Length: 517
Image (tube, rainbow, N blue to C red; front, side, top):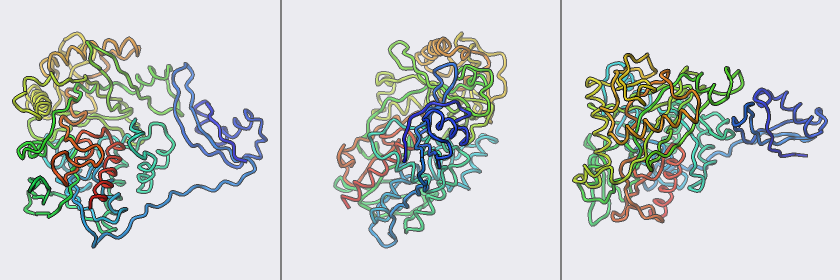
């Protein structure tokens, strides 16, 4: 007999198979000796009450043998000599589009402006230590895209967009821990992702696909409103009639290229703000209502949203046990983001706290047309660079000081490796964003007692929350509305917001390409 139950237990019980077995036997009135196995299907934390509990969905095998379920290997075929489709970008959208094409018997040719996983590390070190930004190889550009070195959160609300479980299984097939199939908010970790991305590349190559690094696209050639080829900076030219454009939310040169060729694009509102860092222990105390979370609870996350003057002010990409990283993609700008290792065992927690933007906020850049939101974003990043002394040091302010408009006398060392510069952040952020954040943080402090403190440090700006441009496409065929053979895809096109949703969108675009091919 196999019994399926939804139960709620203490963290130490959820973490120990013997204790869990005893708990189930007692609460289900089952002889413990007859329980051969308990399989955890889903796991989440309930911290709403003073005593934190773990929600589990379990299968209990009573007098029943348990056979572990093996993942079914994807049905890939050799596409060495098959028809091909070009994919621009090797982030989640591009990589999962490539895997789907191989599954469909089509050869993917990936063009990536940046470097491979291993080579990319040197450029990340150069940003952190020498404040040198390589425009083609940084936290956003290179094999795996922005996701590779920026945390690896896999939670998505995009359940209706596609098969989330299949994406998770493909990640496990390529080396991710099976726990991501169970956890309500799955997370891989920046230290684990690179090897998984490398394994995906190996699969693509082994089945006949191509991956070209250091290959920045400089032109998408069009004839009679149809794609006919791709030109690159290194002189290579790829004849093609189908292109999946999966360049990510920071590829400003691609947005400018499309606009210069009169290919329809649109300005898209996004969110912009700051990244705030607290001691992780403080967040644990607030969220778990205890002085010490103990051995069985993970570092606590938080998610919070408030309305300020008819704008949303909310947490974004919260990283428990993580660090803040420099994510500029061009010299002369400062950009922050956050990530956590797989164990989330750093002493600090950070989160983007951002303000909802609206189309009218970009009116000062109206002459830029569909690039107005992008230029707004760029101006804030460049202002941060100037204010911080024209380096990758980040303008910073203590949190309580931030709400009072007071420059902090000194900034303690934070996880942001290039360092900080004490600045009154009203000199960096547009006034309406600054005031909304001040009000928002005050409201946060009322909801999370202890949050509003000078133990926390505000870093500015957090500006790459999503693409400032949308590339319109047919909702059924996913082809660009005016250019045949061009398939805008993923975050950069405005149709995804994270690893999972981008991967799903990549698969969908690949399927539509395959139908047309």
